[in-house]
Length: 91
Image (tube, rainbow, N blue to C red):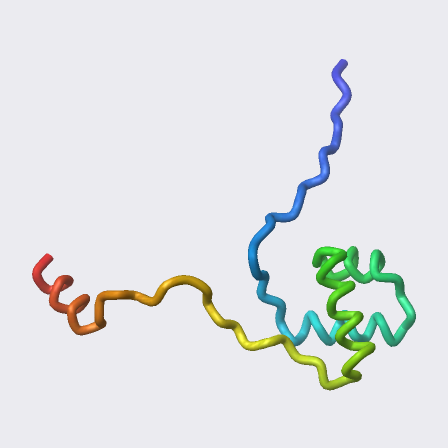
């Protein structure tokens, strides 16, 4: 009989992951309860590095921490919205 091996899933890496204010408040609450970063990461489902970063921001800034505004990266669309509408009508 074959044994089943459990392979842990690796997180998907990306240049910038979005995190909600609710998740940040959970991280800050666990910091106030003196939980470890590993515990907090396991409870929230976020990566250890994300928890470490927000723990540091919480210690430096206090309770008024909020996520930075999302700024999409990359080049702007070179075709105007008006031209896109014209192309759609022609197709």
